[in-house]
Image (cartoon, rainbow, N blue to C red; front, side):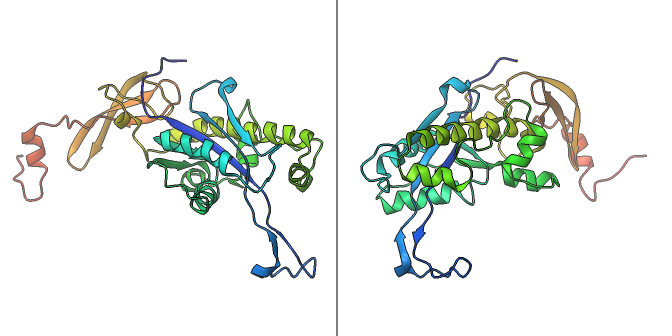
Length: 269
C-alpha cells in the first residue's frame, strides 16, 4: 500500500432504527392514523469508522440495557460528535435514510445541526455511473467486495432481530452489533471499488500540502498523458492504489496558443 497523506476526515456510517409500533385492524390495510401509534421509531444503534482506519478501530453504540429504550439522546450525542468532526460522510442510501433519520431525532431532542460536511452516498454513486441489477448493499458487496460481504442474520432471522433487541435480549444485541459493524466494513470496501469512477469531491482541498491526495487517501500517483479541453491542455495522473484519474489545474498551453483558439482568432496556414 502506498503512503497516505494528511487529508479530510472521512466518516463511514450506518444506523439501525426501531419500527413504529401501532394498533391495526388488518394485516393488509394498514392506513395507520396518528392516534393509532403506540410508540414512535427511534435509533437503536449506529456503527462508524474513519476511512483508512483498521477494523479494530470500529466505533459502535446501541441501546442495550437502558431504562427507556426510546430515549436515544445519549446515543445521538455519540454520533453527533462524529458528524460534527467529519469533513466528508460516506453512507449507503444515507441521503434518503440515515442522515434524514438522524436529523429528525436531533431536532426532536433539541440538538443543533452538526458542522457542515460533504456526503457521498454509494447507492447514488452506483446509480450515476453503472447499471447494476440492484444498488442494494447486499448485491453490490456480493459482486464487488472480496473481503466483506453483507452478513446474513444468524440466530435471529429478519424482523426477529429487531423484536429481540426491543426486548433487550443480550444475544440479539450481540448479533445487531456484529451486523451493524459489518455493514460499515462492507461499505468501506464498496466505496473503494466505486470511487475511482467518480470525481465529485477533490480531497486535496482539505490539505495544506501542495501534493495531490486521491479519494482513496493515497498520495502516490503517476503522470499518464494529457487531458484536453476546448482551450486547455492539462497534465493527467493515475492513482497507484485505486486507479482514479485526475488532472492538474495548470493549463500547459502558451498564452499565444490559447489566444489562437478563441472564436474569430486569425489562423495561420
